[in-house]
Length: 91
Image (tube, rainbow, N blue to C red; front, side, top):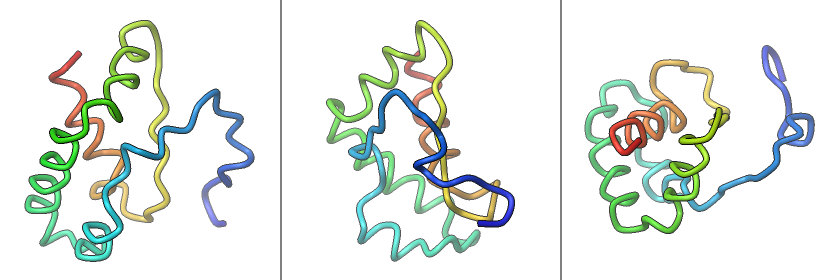
């Protein structure tokens, strides 16, 4: 993997797979920048309906750093950036 590391190499304490966008939403978005605003709207709606998935991350962020990994090549339009933008106002 050029420029990155694999999940196994991260040595993370926890992996919150439940905060990921649904497969249907990820496939629809397909990392198309023109769909970014609508992707965020839909992803935030998914997160709004599933606070038990993201609230542990918000709690962790209150006491320290939280790493939000992503596998997209586009650093400006990826799941981790959208999740960060969703969580920041909740902190």
